Amino acid sequence: MGILLYKAILYLHILSAIMSIGPFFVLLPMMKRLREADLTKQQAYLDTFRSTTRLAKHAGHVLVISGVLLVMGGNWSWKSSWIVMTVLIMVSSLYFLARAFSPKIRKFNQTDQDKDKLVQSLTRSIWIYLFLLLAMLWFMVVKPEVW
Image (cartoon, rainbow, N blue to C red):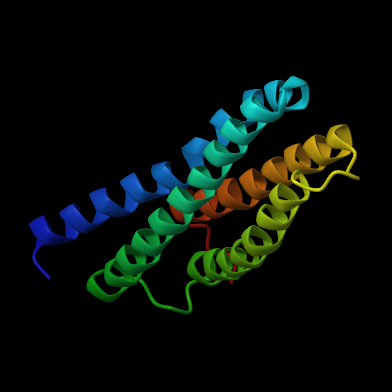
């Protein structure tokens, strides 16, 4: 793989990391507004939340594909500790993403739900997901050799 192509893929990889992490920081201040929103505004906030998770999923696809290409075209082994840890965290984050947001968002449409508890649970899920994504980012940037 040529150096220019490698750098283009690296740029795409970094851009997709930004696109999968960044929007979740925007959701944090929105949670306070969601707690106080009437039904119309609540639906708009939930639509924004759904769009954010959809963007993160698609950016994650680009992130994985570009990451695989970078490992294949670079000097890294699949057995490098930072790659193994990144993949393990990525699998955890995918499982978490599938179970943390959509089921909670659907509960907002149920009449017997405590809105404050749902917002609190959603906020906690955002923080956990951000922690997972930032841990993955740390492994990709620092590239520690644990073993």
